[in-house]
Length: 496
Image (tube, rainbow, N blue to C red; front, top):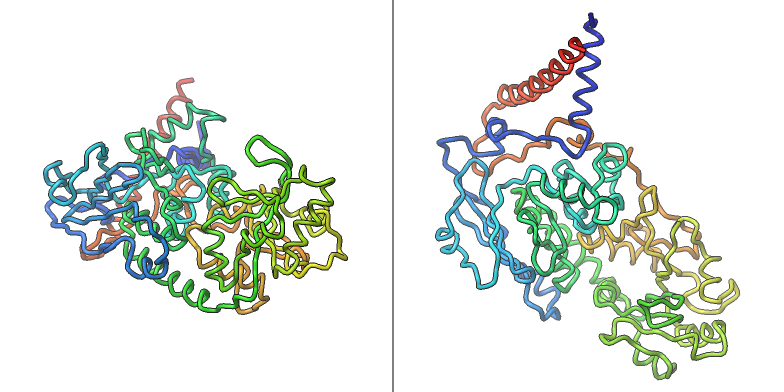
């Protein structure tokens, strides 16, 4: 006969096995009503917090040169919200859990469905979600919703993502590693946030594409779109307002005599314009430099000095090809001769192990030496200032949601201003190394790692009574289910 200690140990193991994976169950509707996340039967409900105009007038004013209309429209009704994504041609009806979903006619009265658009229904707040792109995870982290993601990319950076993926069996599969598992994971989620520009084929797919809306602030304001799926609008507004304030304060410090260039050396490949020295003029990079108070390099002026300088069709990338010179060294001499007076360069050469890439690697890649007499030699920056233990860069996860951090980090790296925090960038001319974040830095209790359920998101406009007994009852209900499972396994053991 099993001892009580053995039974207790087995139950504990079963609790871990039941919860410590991407397949956690979450609360039932009844349990969610008990903890006031969903509307209780017979209670009235109305959304009080709204996002308002999207994008906000202050964003439109700050980025007045952004000519493309926003891709998102958000409308609110009594117990539902309507989000329309004109890029994906999809409309999402978000109904508060515990209330009745509206009919198409009711939704049309709030926001009519345009021709060729697809309408999808979701119950909010989402309890179990997936973000297929790491750039989306930056918004989730800002809202503190890590415990609502049921599986995450192995390339994710923030501590809780690493914890979920590496130690809690919650790695998101992809179509290359295990397409079958990926489809099972997607189907198990309440909603899947994906970068699907042409529409999401999944019935629970949600097009979330902040980079398609030009402007760094326009993209960051998508935190409000993410928040709508979790009833976190109030928090999103506060977060974004703080970011706007910080962004404006940084961009007001103009030192236009300081210039910055984004450079790269690339070997010949099918996807580029041949071996050469590249200058990136991507819109978001130019805006970042300008808003940090610095001056961008003028490629047309460079072309007058370097007639062989060639651009791609949209002018976002320029190259000085090695094949146009007698050697790589000659091409490098011409390239950096024209950039000699630039104050700082951002070196974008790919490094599989970022921490091993230092100033000596920079010299080798660009045919320079420590005796080179260019103005930027003391300001050679990299975008790998923060990364995960397995070399994934935070730049690709957090920057879009946090453009204020990027400005602050660029100011710190170029000016040396100690009042600014080091963010994203590191100066390899000063021997700075990447800051590594790890899973043990996560303090969030996550269902994928053994917690029973995510933190409660309280219904708006419902008074909060004493809920201790209800919450205890909910926890007890979850425990009863585990004990029942344990009992079944034990019974099976006795029969065997």
